[in-house]
Image 1 (cartoon, one colour):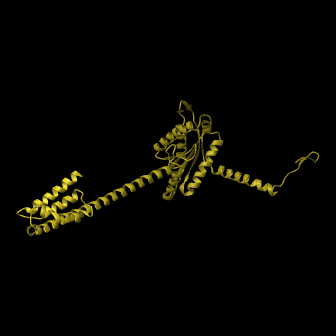
Image 2 (cartoon, helix red, strand yellow):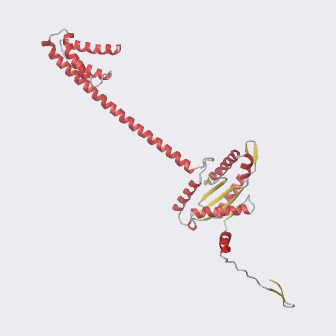
Length: 331
């Protein structure tokens, strides 16, 4: 309060000095009005109260009579009002510009945060949270892109990899050890894929896929499968334990024009089961004839229960007759 009183007193003294000067000018009053706003005397009632008090007291404070002081006072008050309102207008414009700039900055920051959030969300949606590898969604999206952009004669291959006996690791040592082992396996397969300029993805618990674009024939896919098996040969050391891991791999390679993403993944999955059935720790190449036999077998297995219910089975037999005596020996 004391500082404010001293500041206002100094303004009043400047006005008194200006009022009694021989070479009178209202410039000082304009400057005082400007200084008042800069000193934050900017409440709505400030200017009116100041003019009223000065009108009532300034001429007497300067020791002047009304005839001489009043005309000068009118000019001073006009200058004070002009300086005050001009400074207040400039201050308002500055504040509006500051608010606009702050709003723009806030919007930019919000948009940047939104973009960052969307990027993190997209990354999380397309990558496996445990290993950081591309997940099934990213793999499917990549396949869709490849099939849309494929030119005549384009070929593609998938190696569907499943770790052998991985469940035993989780059951015996716990999922935390199993997770560390999966991360280690993923690291080796990812490095292998990068060395071939291809894509590796984790599509299930202990299932991985190598996507190989632009193949020239099954030999490239087989070579990649053999490289994947070789990458797992060296033992994994996790938490003081050493693991010898093997894998079964289903390999499918074909022309893009002859298939679609869903059929390609289905064929690779079927071929993986053939590799498991053939003894594990190996790769198996998709075989059209074997697939047709499997499909027929599955279809027959699915049809048999209903056929039994509908009495669709017929007993067919052939008599076995002994030629020597013409007697029935069996059927």
